[in-house]
Length: 188
Image (cartoon, rainbow, N blue to C red; front, side):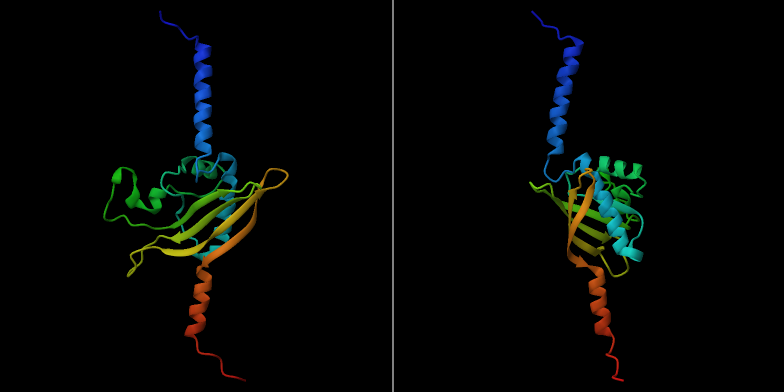
């Protein structure tokens, strides 16, 4: 004897399954939840501000392999952010293993890694901004900045940057090299 499931029961069962699946995907380690996407908008603005003239286009957001960014990129684009698909910045990593010798990495990649949620509501993530453009004599891109951002929601549930721990900034390297290359000024 076969039992029939009423269409409303089937819909209810499927919706419960989909909710359980999306809940587990949202809590996956390293995966941003949709309510946390605004933190990446804050990172984008801060990185471009800090990089100044070193900020170049296209700009791509990337995360470790296995972490999906399509919804995040779509969300940021809908907010007016100029973000390109990561295959534009790194064509050799195009889906399906496509590789064309004339393609080369270029542009700015903002790489977000080591996402941590603290019990006190603090969200932290390590961010590296890389100039992927290959130049004569170089076989890899250039690290411009790397550090850890810390975020917390205010009373209105808006994300705010509460801190930044700098690990590297190209400006520090440049100033050290420039000072060392110039002879000291003679005393007056």
